[in-house]
Length: 165
Image (cartoon, rainbow, N blue to C red):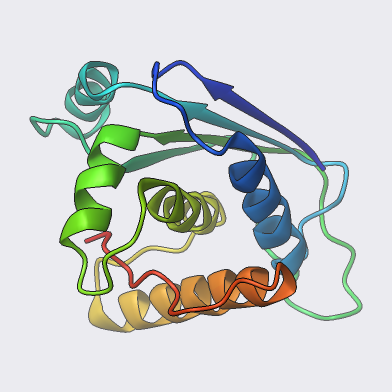
């Protein structure tokens, strides 16, 4: 899996953790290992411009996803996943920091960015949270991926609770 992390935000972040959690999420979702993903980290001004341009909503947001080849996890275990460009995930550390501080299970900006990376991967794969049933499925999967990744790394303590709305 080719994953690029490009930090244009001016904020010091744990780029390796973002790369690792993205790689874990993509593998867990059984996406072809030769597919490509890009993660771009931007400041609040750049995120606000993207949010307004693509969603027609004011203010910066935490994460945006821009799918490319509309890849989906294979429906069956023996099905070969298609190869392609998964797409782009855009993260905003300023919003992530605030959300981590305000979350019921207070956590760091980097932990929030890791959660948002998984959230972004799931959006690229067609998951959404508009309807209650969709939200339950997506957030359940998101928690399972984060918990699995944290366990694999030997991280202890509670996993960050979803703060994405």
